[in-house]
Length: 430
Ligand code: FBP
Image 1 (cartoon, rainbow, N blue to C red):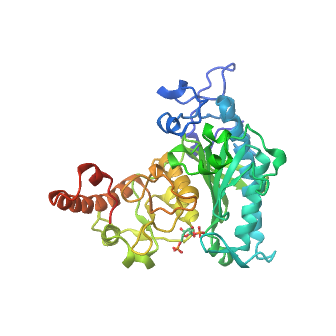
Image 2: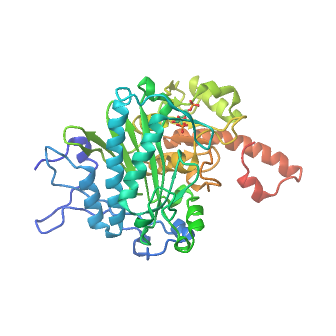
Image 3: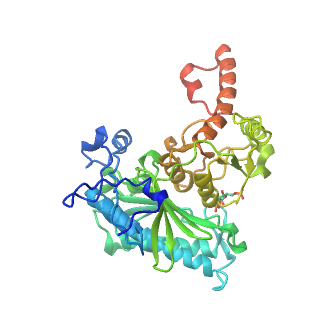
């Protein structure tokens, strides 16, 4: 037995006092811990979000460390209601390993480029690896057996398990299936053929009870705000393959140890720096951005922001890579609204909301510029949303630029009697 390296040891508490005691320490209970969790009703989920009990792990094998499988098993032991989520993560990590392998070999296996004439519903060409990664994830999730519905960037519509034409054969329909998976199987795939990092993003929701009655309701049930997420994560395929996840009790990072074929806990309880000094935006769109974004970026470039230091620019163009760096080093990432794309580019359900959940759980902030991304209700499976996320002080500073303009505009409209106070509070910047 050995103890964790210092970085980990400071983050994972050890509280075993005698041999009869569990090696796990429970985090303090929250007031809502005893709430009845049997209902799936969305409004109730929103108001009574239950936090899980975190495992604190002491007995660590020096050869394998804490694997994701072990972490999930320990978690389930203390949160028996998470048994399905544990098996869902088993299938997600199998898919992540397979996609990691396929990404590395895509050139050798001639899986580069696009399928001729293959477009997704958003009119984007599908690369071969987009389609392959989508199939790998669908198969893995099918095998987990807990999903009634999935929604993917690469599928035109959500797919139901009760649809014989869908991915899930009729034979495995099971009324016990109560989860929804949303994912972007290969985010940033346009970068793949030039060897730039790409990633998978996923989120897990619960179905509402109404869905038991009607297949159409199950499909509509996909349109939930990020606040309802049960779990979220991404897998970054880069110099290492890194899986970062949250179940609503901190954000934890696991690195694939290829020698043993396991994800190993390397970044427990990630905390994003309160403030960073890196900004990550596609500046090619600069002159189309909302004025508050233009002004903010200009200020942090010239040392005129709150910190009075000049920020560095870093932009990979793969969201998973840019967000991962932001999580590790702090700073701000954005794909904001602009004059031609009023909702930006990134998709709310399977890109922005899971990332927002991960960021918030790491002490960060995720905003549209005017409101938390986690509160935005998707109007469509592929709906887009402006995304600003990162260190809390950086994101708040950017939001203050929007607030100043909105306040000024609203004052003028209120004075002219063209706006009432309630509308003014919720008004989107325009
Ligand atoms: P896809 O969902 O089409 O893969 O696009 C998403 C994405 O590649 C993000 O990963 C990245 O942040 C963004 O687009 C980059 O867009 P741009 O090339 O316009 O900067």
